[in-house]
Length: 417
Image (cartoon, rainbow, N blue to C red; front, top):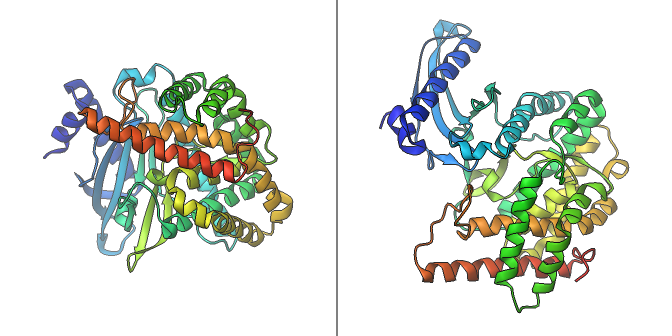
């Protein structure tokens, strides 16, 4: 299938198709020019999903050509993914897509490049990040051309809905390095960090009213599913206090840094040796924001592991995260106890616990196939009453497990219910 037909099939409509094709050719020319490629060509690569996702169109491309920098005009091959703004105008109404692309472009062009400089300056364990070859931030024509990490043998975890102990361990190591780089970034480039704070703003009623409305809607849906259960009073309390709860995850914690904001298994790729994960690559930086590191840590564990794993390994997973974080800061000549001690992490986990539950409830509802209306619908389509009943039962089982584990660790103590 040609690139034109694939794009047309997945995003629909001749005007949209032509617009995307124009983008592709223009981007390839810009990248080839920057890399000093001549006689260059590009072809579409295979991808599990080439479609309009929630907030963008993803197209995998292989660019090849002869490079003047290489001896004897050696051939160069680059695998990349084009991430384009959605063509469906409904996604632009709230301004969320514009903000998401602004953030991700900023993160790739300024934050991650600064992180690369930091890793060249200090003997840090490497945080894996995709190369960014090209960006455009024109309204409705936003685009990023990013290194396709699948070509570097990084793969999504698709074996089950939740990560096992090996995968969550590797994921937390990568997250800890990301957070450590943020604190080093703040110490070594205060001006750019201030700019990052202005772009990657926290979730507040002022900045994210539409998103907060979505969270409230999902809490109401949860309340309907947990009606007449022991969990109903908790959801009632979350529904009435959700704005203060979410804003407190930034305003009431003891330390803040640049956080991923949506760190769960779907935004992590893994590299393997002998069928075991040895490295992780975090992707999708559209929700990067100033927040508590504790939020990213707790959300990753709660949203991406099953309850039985958490009951057995939770404290160990916190140890893995903090020991990695501490090591990275020490190698940058920073004192982790002064910057973000383990005691402060524990305190902040209590504060961010209710927010993690609210966010996890929204994500699990969507992932379970239960969101059937609105602009952002579940990708799983449930056709029969039996399928819907099974999905509801699965959703309730997952959410009740998260609640029980948060309660066991005293992470919902700030909510009165």
